[in-house]
Image 1 (spheres, rainbow, N blue to C red):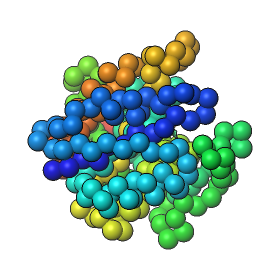
Image 2 (cartoon, rainbow, N blue to C red):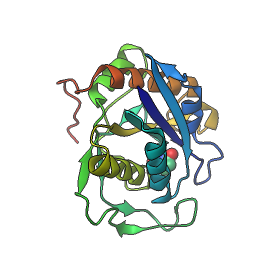
Image 3 (cartoon, rainbow, N blue to C red):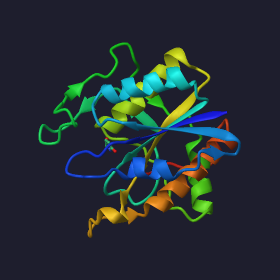
Image 4 (cartoon, rainbow, N blue to C red):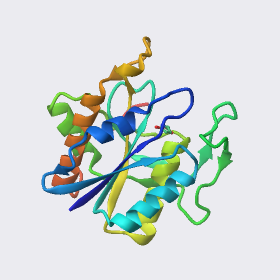
Length: 213
Ligand code: PCA
């Protein structure tokens, strides 16, 4: 079995992105599966093209994309990606793009649900002391864009490949004193546990993982 695991380059004012730093610390083999790692540019559409090329070249069984979500308090496996790119002109991507309500795929549905067992992943992380919660929005910036591109690709061309996205909080080393954070090592542990859960559970657990608001 092969798992493609990606993290992002730094963006905005940040000089590091904990997502790829954590990805780099994940073992290269987990439960007998080979883990292939890739760094993704924080650029609308281009990130999706890089992932698509990696999927075509590597032929993974599972794809897990990872990105930073500053302000989150826990590891956040994402439930859904939506067919929209929308960001403030004051916060463009790394090539200056700031789409304001563009459709990602004209021929795609409004949204795709993850095909990863996100509840099993959250449960396994929690049981092993890593803060984790199901997230019901990946935003409308480059992370959502990447997740949507991946799920559109898998749905249309690779129906047997499972994939999805995990947002991580700021890293403690980034030193945002008023923001919640985790260490990169803790994030890497959470990613390893998530990969184990994805290998162990082809179908997700029937347990609650929703939110009232
Ligand atoms: N986080 C951004 C894009 C890159 C990243 O790590 C996001 O949540 O959209």
